[in-house]
Image (cartoon, rainbow, N blue to C red; front, side, top):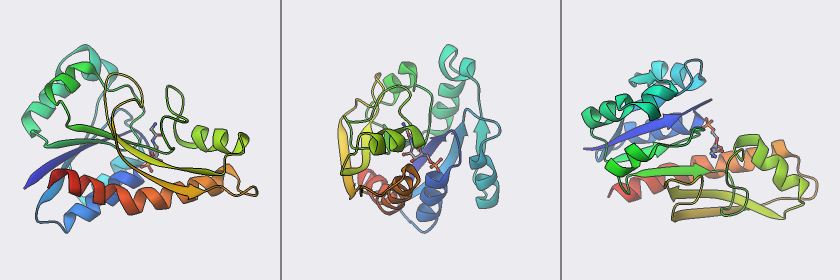
Length: 187
Ligand code: GAR
C-alpha cells in the first residue's frame, strides 16, 4: 500500500476529496494530514474521516527537523500540498526529492508566486479579463509555483463571471482531477 501525507492550511476540501477517494483504493491511502493552522477546518474533516492529523508551527517546519522527523517516521511515498500556504522547506525537499506535489488554482506560470493563492488568484483572473483559467498540478521545488508541471486542466471564464463563479469552476476541476493524478503518479 502506497502512503500519502497531505499538507493543508485551510478548509481542506481537496484533502477530504483525496481521503475519500483513497478510502476505496487498494493501492494507496492517506495516512496523515499536517497543517500549519491549528484552527483549520481540515482538522475537523480529518476527525470526521478518522484520519490522523497534526498541526505545527514555523519552528517545527523550517527551523528544526521536527516535521521532517514526523515524515521520516510516516515514510510517505508522496507528499501532497493541498491548499498549503507556507513555503515548503528545502530540508524536506532534499530528503523527499520528486515526492512533493502541489495543486495551484491557475494555469501556471500565470498567476503564480508569493501572495497568489485562493481567491486572490480568481480576483486577478477576472480583473485581467482572462477568457480561460484552470488548475495546475506540479512538482514542488525551492521557488513558489515553479516546479515541473505534471498536469493542467482548463475552464472558460465568461465576461459575466465573478471571482466566486471562477472559484466554483476551479473547485470542480480540482475535485475531478486531483485524486486521479495522485493515483496515476503512485502507480
Ligand atoms: C485550492 O483551490 C488550491 O488549489 C489552492 O487553495 C485551495 C485550497 O482549498 N491552493 C493555492 O492557492 C496554492 N497556491 P481547500 O483547502 O478547500 O482544499
